[in-house]
Image (cartoon, rainbow, N blue to C red; front, side, top):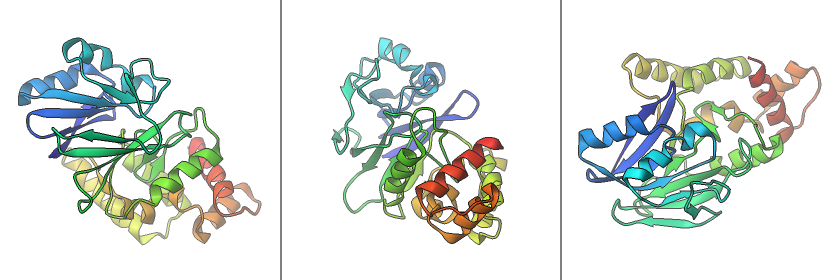
Amino acid sequence: MKIEAIPTFQDNYVWAIHNGHSAILVDPGEAAPILTWLKQRGMTPHAILVTHHHRDHVGGIAELLARYPVPVHGPARGAVNSHPACEAEMLEFGAIGMRFRVIETPGHTLDHVCYVGQRDETAPAHLFCGDTLFSCGCGRLFEGSPAAMYASLSRLAQLPEDTQVYCAHEYTLENIEFAFAAEPDNPELHVRHAQALALRKLGKPTLPVSMGTERATNPFLRCDLDTLVVAASQHVKKPLRPGAETFAVVRAWRDEV
């Protein structure tokens, strides 16, 4: 089993989980690059996983289905999703050798879901988190509340530290710029910055990244820590409580830059 990124649009990634013959495609927002990727490798789709309904995540599905009528798993409100993905549901894909657990993560959208995939219980997990969690960042709140998003991120942060995180966008370097403003003295953040710069200079994705690294560097996963509480309090010039209240300020702060 391999996991590869198919770049689409300016900074999206469609994740292809495959065995060399068939692939599960995550958030196929644009069909042409995916069809080219499949043709070059002599592969066919096995299923599609959708995290949420935004066009850059679902726009390529109709064209893919016209050629490959495969099941589409995603939030119940998605018009193209033939198999609603609900909290704690287990999706089995024996042909690929993977099973996925669905986690509902409202915040970016009200119906956003993430998928935690594993070959078996002894192997590291793979988190496909759409636009809920980015490396050193998180999605904007288009529909959900700060409290809902903080709860969703807190759930993801509880996954084992060796969980590999596959976000849907290449936002890492710009997210790190903000993370430095919020937590400039975080040594792990400086390490992550150097690593991400090196990868991008080679034309490689900064993903996946371990959940352990995210917990050490992502300000949105660290809003219960004194460093973030103090920084956010100073930004709005009033005392804040750790957790959701600090998260709301940090997310609004990020929106300003």
